Length: 555
Image (cartoon, rainbow, N blue to C red; front, side):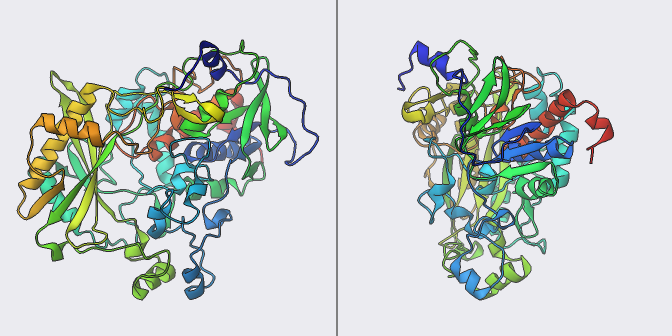
């Protein structure tokens, strides 16, 4: 358990009251900005671009460095530089190296993550969208209607234009390869047949955007031109062309500066930068970290919503073996870092942006809808993501996650040494703390495994065998209390901020990132968080500069 005194709880919810002398060493240009955005993840990239396009003098401060070639990263595999001189595919531009982006999996991977957070939180430009599998799932209308119905201006109707604007700049696609073909997708056809056998309907996941309830289809990504897309491509590159937009990387914000309830700027690298407004987009862990900044006085803002409502998707992995293994051939990306790949496939990637090296190998996504035992109008949704074999023909796995509708929640807190952790103690995350979550999750797991075991030639190797519901409840309690790094909450709408995303107790401090999310969506949340940023930034722009919406940028 993290020992938190009553005094600390008050301090956690406080921003700096200490009068700070402005440092004399100027390591960043000091000038007044209309708005400063703290954090260049999904929310911060969308919001800062929107602010700049509206004519606001905008500064985007990113804690870490660049990840894509277009922004200055040069982590190109040595073999690729030698064989394809002048190529511009860093290990983050191309998805063939996606699997070595996590600590312990590849060189320098640990440096991409925040050192003040015990769980994984990306601290580089792009945030999670620069290191993840780039899944881009349109938030379904049912989820929006249920989750945001109590927030004025945040209904399903309110979201539609914002979602479409994201889709226009980050077009979802089911194919990584620029030729539109799927490579080594045999698992899709096999597991699609299994899902059909248990009553799951196939849909076009790119166009049937609301069909994520007892449906399955191709995995959908933020891919562009055979490489990683997302907000770094669809938003930031446009913002960088504007004269009123400034990006500063390697610029960690240590605190916000205030006078009364008014925020006057931020401190970064020992320098105070002034601004009329500040938006925290530092992510689910570091936005509350900034709000938790501890000082001697604590009588300014007591906001119990800071750190609360933390949510994530518990996950487990199901492994399979198909008897006719040659029908499900493996394709390995393990040699991509050293060049131990097919020359023809490498040529396809570097010269044409096509072929099996363009994608991460995720082929199918399905959603199993599970109604409440005594109320069919309520439900939870479990998502499965099936990938191609990576080392042995016929052997593959499906990720199995509890998503929309889950009830379990946690809370973040500031621990010893300023490290962000769980308020209930290390390892005590927001996974399966509610027994109904586990029961419905297990119900979906049993349905899926029973269907797979009944399919000719297919064997579930883990968890092996045929079991009753109680077995799967126990199995999930032992094996699924694991983070999917789909963090949300911690500064949620209504609890921590108002409907304009203004932090309670302040005049001009806003939040735009995944911490606003009241509840998890059906899939990877990147598209949802980008849509929230579109909607929230519009509300802020209209509040700060009402004529902008009518007249456009003044340049």
